[in-house]
Every structure is written in structure tokens, then in C-alpha cells.
Image (cartoon, rainbow, N blue to C red):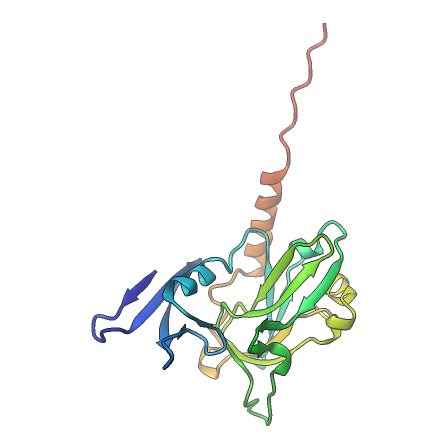
Amino acid sequence: MIRESTQQRGVYSMSVKHRSIQHYKIYRLQNSWYYISPRLTFQCLEEMVNHYSDIKGKDCEDQCVLQHSNRICVITLAESHPILQNGRSIKSINYQISAGCSRLHNRVSGKSKRGGQFLTEFAPLCRITCTDGVEYTIYSCIRGRLLEVNEDILERPELLLGKPSTEGYIAVILPKIEESKTVTNGLLSREEYESVVSKRTSSTQPEPQPQPEPC
């Protein structure tokens, strides 16, 4: 939902519901384009709404956020993601998000990891295309500074298929200190995730067919 500020005319914010309602301030460039994250801009509000309405929460496209005690979060595919199902193969992995934004160009420096691209929960990290032609967009899922992407999976996509939570990870993100303890609040715990997958699996299983009665 897009709404105009009651205090500042011409200033907008967007509310997005994904398990919980989150609010984002919409910024405007001098050329009148809109953005939430400066790395991803839109020519009009309708285009922005269409983009954020089409992500995060697609059926079965599950991702995993592994948070370590040092605040660092590793973004991976969950084992239930369609890419990892039915022996599928990967055709390509692309970290080029738009003409002006590539996650491969991300650079950080110093102990404070300055200079990394700032990501919102909805920021795309990469696009993965399977050999059957189906493309999947992988998202950040959390707010924070991008530390690195896994370039190894570009040359060896089998790492993503065989070891998605370790050597086949997607990216590493560092949340802000003040957000580090709450950054995963809107996500499912391991137990909740397993419950959702279990219910999803049982609901997709075919109902038993009635047996014909003997003559």
C-alpha cells in the first residue's frame, strides 16, 4: 500500500505485508524517479508497487538466513527451494541486477566493512536460470550491508545444488548493530519452517482413489 504523508505533502511511504507489516519511506531523485534502496530506482510509483508485489513470499521459493554470533548473515537456498528439487540443473547464475547495478562490483574495506552496497529485505541478489528455462530471483531477505557474493558458484554451480548451506551459499550480509538482534524477527524459525513444508507436502499429495468393489 502506498500512502502520502499527512505532515509532508509529496512524501510517500509504502507498507508491505509479509507475515508482518513493514513500512518503508519512498525517496525521490532529482530526475523524479523513485526508490527505497538507491541501487534500485523506478520511473513511477506503479512500477515500484508492481516490483515489490511480485517478490518475497512466492510459493515454495524458500530461502534460508543463517545468522552467526558476530552479526554476519549468510543467505542460502532452503532445501525445499524448487532449484534443488527433482534433479534440476543450473544453466546460469547472474549477479547483474540491472544495467547499473552488479553485486559483483560490491567492494568493502576496513574492519567496519565500509563501502558495501546497502540492501533492503526486497533487494535482489542474483537470478538463477535452470536448464528447463525457468528463472528464479534470489532476494536479500534482510536489511544490511552486502559483504560478499559467492563467485565460486558461477564456475561451479554444482556447489549450489549439492551444498546450498555451506560452499554453495549465495551471499553474506552484515546487519546494522542496532538491528542485528531483530533483523530475523519476520522470518520463520527452523521448527516453523519444517512445519510449513510438512503441511505443504501433505496438501499436494494426491488423495487415495476408491477401490472398486468386487462383483
